[in-house]
Amino acid sequence: MRRWLRQHHYALTVALRRLRTQPFSTLSNLVVISLSLTVPILAASVLQAVQPIVRHIPVSPEITLYLAPQADLKDAQQVATQLTANRDPVIQSVQIVAREQALARLQQESAWAEALAALESNPLPHAVIVTLHESPEVAREAAILAEQWRSLKAVDTVQLDSEWMRRLGAILDFLGVGLGLLAASVALVVLATVFNTVRMQALSQREEIAIARLVGATEPFVRRPFLYLGGLTGIVSSLAAIGLAQLALLPLNHALARLASTWDAQLILALPDTASLGAGLVLVTMLAALAARWSVTRNTRF
Amino acid sequence: MIEFHHVFKSYGRGRNILADINFRIEPGEFILVSGPSGAGKSTLLKLIGGLEPASRGAVHVNGHRIDRLPRRALPYLRRAVGVILQDSHLLFDRSAMDNVLLPLAVMGLAPRVARTRARAALEKVGLLGMEQLNPIEMSGGEQQRLAIARAIVNRPAILIADEPTANLDHDSGQRIMTVFRDFNQVGVTLLIASHDHSLMAPYATRTLHIEAGRFTDIRGVPS
Image 1 (cartoon, rainbow over the protein chains, first blue to last red):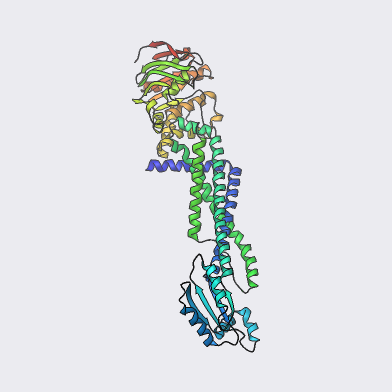
Image 2: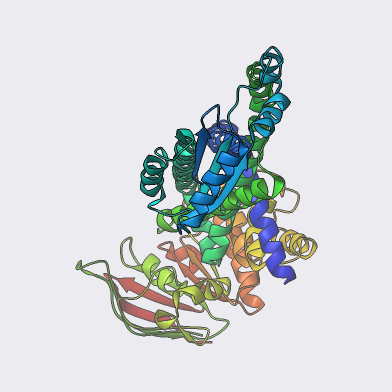
């Protein structure tokens, strides 16, 4: 065990020496990989900030039936009873929102409070909100139901509330896939950069490798410094990328705060949580070590 | 013990570099492999060191048939065979000490033990006090002695050297031969390939003369 640890210590020392003896090459590789890794970290930060907002907005399909201004709460109850009486399996729930309730909700929002205060009476109608069960056919079924309910007595307008949220959800899904593809591209950049670095190193260390084999070095002994080289490149690049992303978030958050304040809202971009960053670091390190192993195996067959 | 049975060596479909080689070397012998350039001396040594495989026949070293050893077992055999090549194959970006420490690092020896052994090896070849020098700062003879120190530092049972005195003046050559003789006297089996027969012959217990890949003369008595 001690012998094995000593050999690893030796490999680490050799890897560090090789990195040190070619500072420009080392630095340029680290910069390329770090910058490549910074992009998905920032993208993940944005996606992470946007997702909770979307999550709090109902994405399940809803249909709102606004009653005519002269209709009273009894009419609203009658409409609700009519909708539930059919026991349509598509309907999940039916909820009445009285005009007073709706007004109170709006008054809680600062943007509306001022405007509503200027009104003498409540201009809002009673409403019936119908939530539908999620299904692949829900959009089509919702459209049919909305069409049917437009002819109900006392109903003035029927609105499919969830449509724009569904679009936003789809956009977020698209962005998620985009982030996945971006991460895959960055993985390729890491793979290619480390592969090429190790290839160059293996070629320039040809003589040293031949001598090591001459004195009885096993193939794992020959490969080990290159694996450390790949692993160290992965660790340092990941840490540098996290640092760069953190730095980039400072001006981004400053600009975002000014933008959000115009809507009287707060939006802050933050790095993904430590566990995710740690998992990313381990993944990049393993990927870099894997690229190094692949490269050293291919380029030391002499 | 080193034994060759009907060994052939060729590269691709080219001519045989070695053809039907048969011999046996007992432990502790000092063998001179002589012959003109291109006769196959270096190839013979490379087969013993496991640096190249035989095309046909059986090569036994230290009780192992090395042409049948799995690839991963070869490095362990090489540790038992010290190899000194004509071109000293030193690491010119490291100190003399680091060069000698390399075989011990390969074996995973503790640094303190390794340093003691490396110093002892450098002392044996007369380079103690020069351990911090870079090989580039050394003369040809010193570089060759450094290569010998590296070859003997892990105490191999067999030492093979390919033209170790080539490109050296007579005095440096003599000094290296004295070093080899000292190792032989403590039981190390020595095989030296050289075309400088006059320098080597006084030290060798046997001479294997090779020409065009075949032994043409075997002189001396096995010890």
